[in-house]
Image (tube, rainbow, N blue to C red; front, side, top):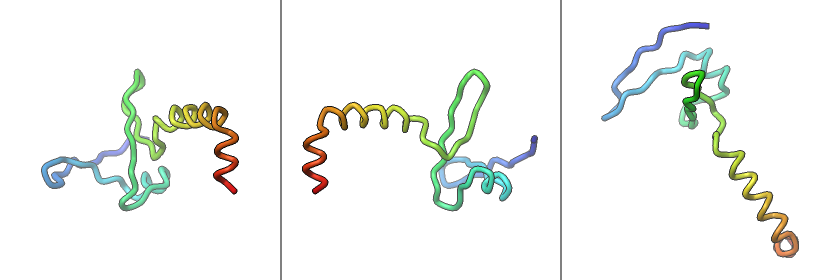
Length: 75
């Protein structure tokens, strides 16, 4: 799918207005945060945090190490 979008001035920045169909496909609405990722295939816009996997891996390591303390805190 190819479509045009206008770049508009928003304060001291510029922004793109997502067409309704694109916002629905991304499952985003007003005040939601989107992320962009640049890779060898170009620029990608996603509602998912690309750093989330690394954060979850760090949590898994911490969770294993402090399993007993987390269990006690959960009571």
